[in-house]
Length: 210
Ligand SMILES: [Zn+2]
Image: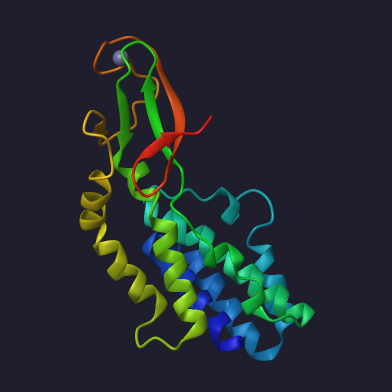
């Protein structure tokens, strides 16, 4: 259990380095070192990273891969620490990783002309959790040759291909845009009538959630 905990902490530390938060990178390495002496102090140190202002709760990630990895690592680390504390089997607590489906897609819909806009970032964000969940499950159930961070970085490099595949699932009439059309008029009819809606994918097409 400790080996796995350490590999997740190491990925967390690498993520923080990548995002230029060296303080938090050191923090996670420190948590990892504490594991060698005792688990409760390591867990304490870990949870202190989230207490109040100026902590990890305030950090913003613009990159969708970093953002998702951050939340997935938070989740799996909490599961590991809690299981260790309560003497539970980690493999019985992995539902959120095992039953993952594509995330909802944010679509900016125009109520005047019916035009629909999705950003590349939101589109790719529908599949990233699945990819990262798979990497995390591999880490738990096997002993991969490459470190988690390395495997994650390889997956992130495939973004263009992933975006290409996902674009094909989108209705041809929709616009795939680079930046968020928040607070801007509709590009098709110039009216201020864009509204954000959530869509779900059923394997064939995207449909609006009521
Ligand atoms: Zn419009």
